[in-house]
Image 1 (cartoon, rainbow, N blue to C red):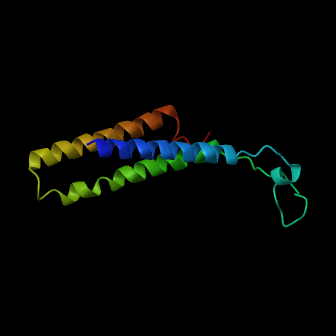
Image 2: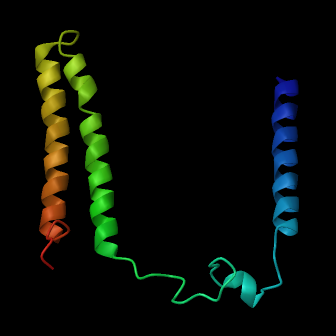
Length: 117
């Protein structure tokens, strides 16, 4: 038990030292205008390096990913129909779909799904 505790302590100390040394060595104090500017094949950039980004598009993409993952989590529910009890399967499926519908209603109520504005 003591050997295991010593190994854990040694690992924690060693990892802390390595993280501390890497944070000291990785700091860049010199800021160069050429390094901070966008690169366009050796020429001066014609426009701004950062284009404006639609936050609405990002929100719709995140909502799509969340609901896509939740739909993917429904597939094992179909596969477990023959293995589990019918009442348990119905309660689990209803609860999960209820959570999905509440999330969808919340997003709709907040106006995240309104494309016109």
